[in-house]
Image (cartoon, rainbow, N blue to C red):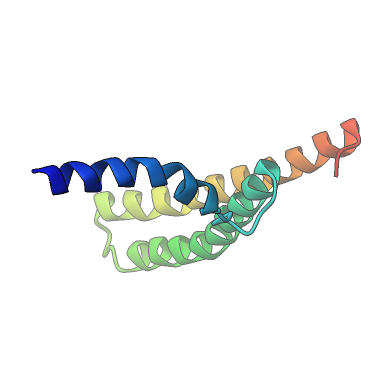
Length: 107
């Protein structure tokens, strides 16, 4: 019992010395929060630009293979419409952010 107590006390006494030697490194490669947000936005933009044409193609294939079925035709049209609306929103958001940054003088 005394041994365990002595080990516990010695560890508690050495803990501040060990804690001073620990150095934390930044796990991210960005220095500021703004840079991190910019990179996340860039990733989402690239993802949307790649995904939108694929969704349009799938919607067009669904439209072509509907065989006159109104549900499948409507679903194909909706896919194309929503993909175009989503792409427009992404492009407008990117342009709006650039305009606001230019207006307030931040780059």
